[in-house]
Length: 284
Image (cartoon, rainbow, N blue to C red):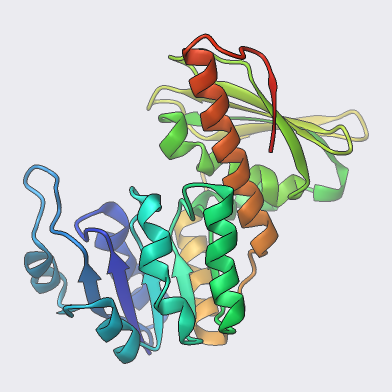
């Protein structure tokens, strides 16, 4: 089975690792064979597309059309430029071949809905997810008993909050109603409220802060933990199964909810940092 990569630029962590991980997990049955990028890496000392393809033993194709035509399935990457996903996905989603779209799925809720609408119109199986969804520590929780979650992790809000929101939505559902920013410009934090009154809190800290969570249960108990499992390996296992079966395990409504939360969080953060609408609840 031959996979095609479609990216904004290829010299990034995901593009550099997915081919070997997929090859290993599939026992060599699935191979990343083709790649296309809109531009060469803009990063200092970054590789050109031709250099990257030669280093990884992947055939460089000159257009998205060529990748779509030659591939059995596709990965649309661009992990650092989600604003490019809608354009990069348009042709791949029209052929009925499995398509995985890297995080962050879309730059806003409306774009996420449009991308999935194209896939639905052409009966194309597709999904997107942060790899953190696959942390074994999250997966072992009893979702039916969760009344609240308190999550923490590293990195800036706009780029890294998906890694906290994805597990929250996977555990508590997609029915988020509103969001309130409760942090500062340096240490962003916000609260999500579900329509049934349950809440979850997200906070961002320095790069030395591990992803972790406190889960509160309906019986009055709580459990706290760091994410120490190999979530990338579990994610690749699920991705390989998706390519083999064409069946995605991540519901589209959850992905749309994740993007809607991120959009509201960024909006609330900007409002706080400019001194307007501080503490206001924002509809998700």
